[in-house]
Amino acid sequence: MQENENTPPFHMPKPCQHCDNPPCVSVCPVDATFKRPDGPVLIDNERCIGCRFCIAACPYSARMLNWIKPKMADQDEGLPYNIELNIPQKIGTITKCLMSSDRLREGKLPYCVSACPNGVYYFGDEYEDAVTNGTTKETVKLSTLLHDNAAYQLLPELGTKPRVYYLPPTNRVFPFVPSKDAEPKKS
Image (cartoon, rainbow, N blue to C red; front, side):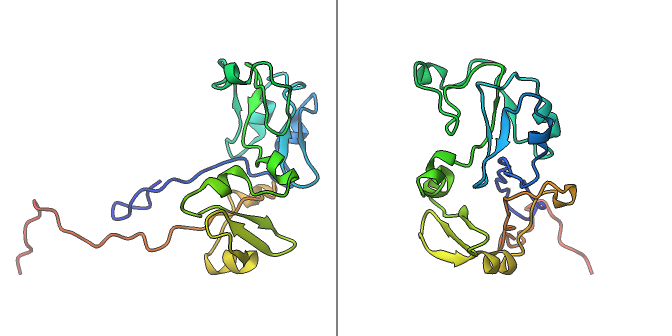
């Protein structure tokens, strides 16, 4: 994304929002999509029939159908089915961000948080009002982080109650540099 011609482009990830009121769950005719009590919205690919109702219902475009053989299918072949890791994946089933639900069960940070070298992802508990990132491992107050950085959610007006917050970019304006072709203004 790019705000304007004087700002650098930036990457804006749009993973599954793990909504508290996920429309993908209510439209699944075989109950393959469900919300786990601790937050993640998961897919049971042993039940998924690939109808794509959940794709149509998701306003965040966070779901994808495995139209072709999944990338890691050969490596995952023979592994026992694991709903938290969504392996092995199959052609004709849905995939998406699973919020590293296997790591959450173990009390660890999600993969994206612990692996980000820039520490831009935070994870925590809204009720405890605490979040941490994977780089500094510093715990900060969620309410303060959201307030001080003008955090926002995507499409909250839809009533899905998304659980992902975004912090807008700061200090991204480049100094104005006139082009070499620009003519000086005449007074």
